Image (cartoon, rainbow, N blue to C red):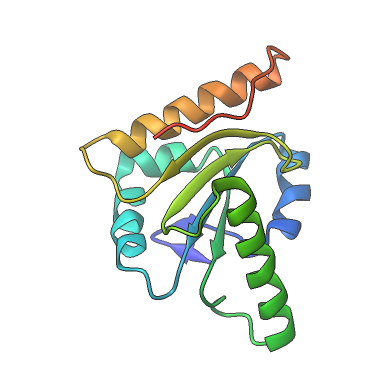
Length: 149
């Protein structure tokens, strides 16, 4: 899916091998077709400073209400259920939007962010924090799964 020049995969299972090959972390965007705050955050992602940062990740939009553009109903239902299970397991709820930066294998949550940006620059700081966590993880400095708002 293309959002203002930012490319997003719709299926985490297909994005993971790409992230592993590129040695890039995954930026998971838990979103919904019928989510007003998700559209507002997409506008935040379109800001030049954020766009530049997001381009460093393998970005995946994980729809939690309906998966757009997937015409095979069975495939769409499977992706939707996987997205919901992942969000509930990682965040304990299905609030939208929510974001997670994870290792390419999807096993380590490096940073997380939930909700609409309440103060200017907050989402940009999250992206920077997440990238720093990724660099430390890559250096072998290790990191523990963390939540950062």
